[in-house]
Length: 345
Image (tube, one colour):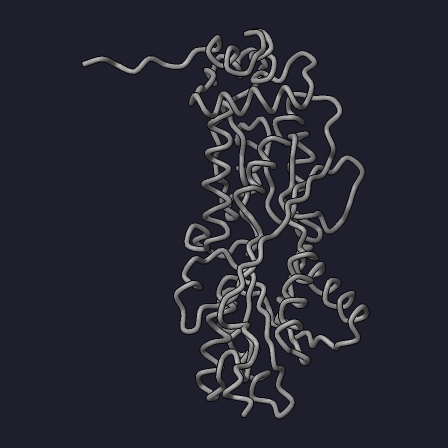
């Protein structure tokens, strides 16, 4: 049986049309290499499944070859993030992107003690959804560990590096889509939380409202352990009002399910009585009854960009922009279709 040989740096160099030294510079974060050349080398390395020897690279830099990924949205609550499609995609994509660059990625639980945050050996950290007065961010800064945030820091500081989805675009596209389908009383259910995401959602709603002259009702619920119960209660109360909305948007992965459940309980037809949409990565919404319109925040792209930006910071790469934005993707489905002609007769 013939064994498969490990791809070599020379093969990557030949495929990318550069020298072996240039490939080494790109993968080691050394030397001066243009962004276009660097991107081409990384693409060919991925195509050939080439991985540098992490320990050798880390040793040459005096590093560990390890980077961390924090998941602290729900504080110290014991949340299984891997069961939430957004975070599952985020974690898997980050692991893959780190491996392709020769790094080991460690997912750091929110329940780590302060000592663990201070003592875990890491070359850098991707910090997801920094919060107001974020304790983790402060610890990492005191340790002078390079950090890139996924999600815009609420308290912006000089020297911040971050990657985020254009959340405002996600909300605007959904509201535009609903208005085009005939909605005139839209509402959005938003969590009370101290990261930037709910704030950006609210700002986008107010901007859209001012631009279109159509009021957008904002309904809040507390983001506490067991938040799905709080959101379900908020949705139930909203749809039980005489002046209920004719379209409802949720911004979390379970939101579409909560809205459909409330509509069924109240005997509301979707989409004729109520149009339903949510921001979610859950593929199951394509198979609900009716299928629910969703917007993807592209967590996989966020992770790839975050890993690349973090390694640029670790390697002191020059000419790197401090922040990057990823475009969301709208998936229109039956839950937001225009009212049927038969229902209007």
